[in-house]
Image (cartoon, rainbow, N blue to C red):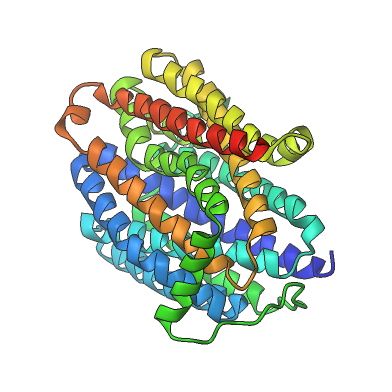
Length: 420
């Protein structure tokens, strides 16, 4: 790879910011479930935030294809760092944060994700040779999920603290020589804000030579959007694959923020460390997938590989719907990590190989916007009173089974059409 130093610094910045962001994004849903007992407010807020990202996601794609991706990283980190830092300082001063301020941190982080990750992949494609696309995407997955393992572990500690020197993480009990007090939500936000500012310094040292240096489209916002849409319309196979293979990711986000905290609290009747531990098992699965998925599946058709992974996660969702065992829950989280990461690596590598770098941001934003519509539908469905009664949230996983079956059927149709 030509730009090794730039890629290493990119990974380092992702690790630092991803750790604190991960802790915050685990802590916030649990805060509304356990601390303030207002899951309905959070679900409604998440629905409104997701609707808002529909428009932001489309615009973000035009920014990524128009401006320096390095400068985009620096600017977004400045905005997020200052905002979350201000909320944290306010909370520390008053020893209190309103539900609106807590959810506003969640909102700006979601908005940041909607430009950060498309920009990350576009930047990676820009500075990496084509024969290294698969390797790069695997590295991004491994790095990101290793960070998530740490975030899940720290979240488990910070959300619940220790009792009588005992720490429970991922279903295992550890005896410590000291007790750890659980953190307040604004303390977690302060840690989060500090990492944004650290990342700005790292990005200022990144130097690179573009590998993919196609012509930047300089027209109006509408014209740039139109070019992205037209490319996908003219390439329907890429469009359908990119959309359908995104369904597992759509459900995973909704599962993480809406289903999972209530499932742990209302169905498993478990505590915050079990909830946070799910992230650890998920991330271990994703790391495993990042290291081995291309090695095992590179000789198989991409469509078939994605269908196999979707079938495996369907089995996990089905088991989690009906079986009330922690080991089933942890294995299901592990399988979700393996399959979601595997599909994401295969999908991103496929898109890198089929979409030019000067269009990748807008093409990704189209997929992201359609994905958001799916998530809005899922969140609205899961916000129905039925899912808030007793342990009915478990039926949310059955919805995931049906979504995976429909997606797999469409991908198999594409596969057989390609074979003709």
